[in-house]
View 1: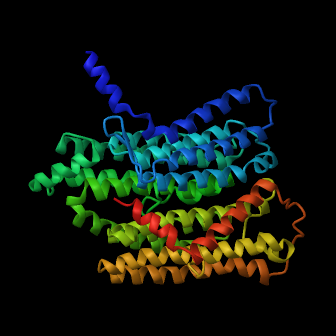
View 2 (view 1 turned 180 degrees about the horizontal axis):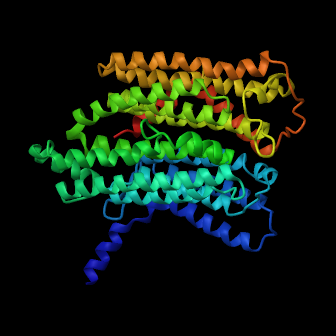
View 3 (view 1 turned 90 degrees about the vertical axis):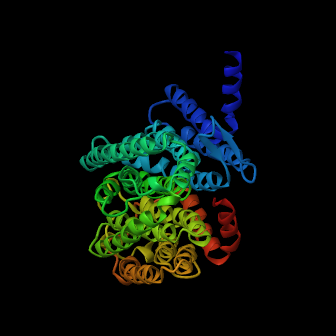
Length: 486
């Protein structure tokens, strides 16, 4: 018995989950501190949350080129997980910076908001670090449950209630598909360890074509594709993005999407390498469908949050191109693209946070008429983010698309890359339309309600620096992304 206990303790290795452990401890501490704080006073909670993210970043970087494995190989803090952890922390940090004044403006200064962001980030970290399907599922549930609450945070607003309920019901439904797929793969391989599933399939080639194996892969894919908002599992995205609080929408568009891609890449590339021809064909079609649906539907949107929701769908399609390529350039391009997308999309949402009135009825194209002249800094910032989302050099969006499409071409998917480029050309219309309204339409209001709150301005400046740095000098980050792949 003593030997079993010693063996169990040796297998634990808390260093492998230390980043998420730090976040969870800070989150629980903030919950306790909120009990003793006056109602409506959330500034201290936001400051402690920023400190928590900085400490977690330092702890997480200890895993770079120093992989830690724990809990009998169920968790790995390797370069792959560390790179994604920094992306999650960046998304959470930018979200928290833009949140405090926004929550007070909307009449919901709720201290529990910040621990939920931290817990959601911890769940994303478990998804990136998980080397076992059950660990990935645990991370997905921690991430999702926190987001369900955050989406419906404005409980007296019908749109927020709809967003939370719709996300919860459809999210729970997709989780059922994921669990069913895991069960089928366990039935085939007798294990839920990702690497062991890969070894089993390589040792038993006859099982690769087994209907249960293929069904397990397909069902599990649905759960991940729902989280990244890939077509045809994207229908929840515009309603949830529009109804949720804007900072929450910003976080959902970057953090959970990156976490789902991290899990999808680890499971498919390591665990289901024997089924590569099958999942490549599947993702090839879904990438095209996702890009087309996202870009074409975005053209008809007048609400900016809905437009960015369909834009998010299109960008999921671009990232899927890198997974279809499944080579070093394409896979590392996904890591780079997730980081770049975090900067440019959260920056755009930070501008919307400052530009919005209470209730956010003005976040439309008409509401942005003349905005660039009345608020020059925010107009220039929004222009930079729109250009990056288009993929115009020298921005992060251009560099990210270049690497992903280069990976596709290198693997022989030339037509897929061409379709991706054509979709990027289509996106010019609705991104440029925002710039046209800001600078070529007469202002209908003086935007006197716009206050340059420190946190949101800092998040915008960080996002601008990130977009330009990754666009002008992408090499260093791309090299790190290449070191992070399997």
